[in-house]
Length: 329
Image (cartoon, rainbow, N blue to C red; front, side):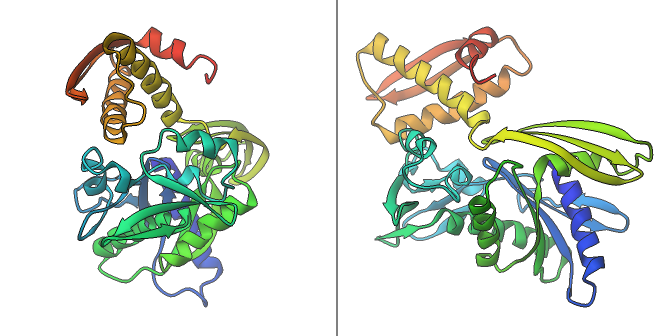
């Protein structure tokens, strides 16, 4: 993610140079991710990744609505288990898609918030101050972009109007336009929409003068891209690109969640698949367990009162994790 921001901030700097007369003020780079987002600025000859108000350089792409306020980022994610139907995440997987898309229908089964069909588009229904409001995915994404904009403004001490935003290489025109629309709703002039693998390649090759071929694998929380690029004397050319806009860490988590839900039902005779709070509890702990497997061969998942007052404890090995996701690898 940081490499992507390195590129987009440099691209933003270049865009500002190209349109010097039209652009006033700083240009930021935003990596709007499925699970996390971040923002950077090209300053004094180098890229700075800007920390948020919690001191972190990445911010969860979460938005939540409580009885009296809207939360974005860490604050939203931290209360997800007690407020599952009002906590929105993975919205990037819905942006620019149709409600009847098979991937959207698959996500609806595991996402705790309500997704409705409006004019063939997947819309998100939440209660805002006691009244149900239906929002487009780009509206929710705009709230995350607003958070990134404010993070940059607090750091720079000045208003930010312009940005460059990255998207998966395999995003179609509708998904790209919806991302740009989200930026507009957030009050940003989106100068460029740039492919994420290209971002990583350019960040890697900025100081490379010789001719090279670069193959970039970009596996994120919700998307996967592969791009082949050539670099020659600082000039980049995308030769080929492929990918899946619905494959990432979230899919690995879902496989493990489904595995544990089956074990829970077999052990205790209870079906927890319809309980949104329990699913959100499981989602949180599965992500932690998956992360632990990066540095150990097995990890223990323990959840107190997972469903109907029943505690749940299971071990997940790295081999089992790989087996559950074998067809995705």
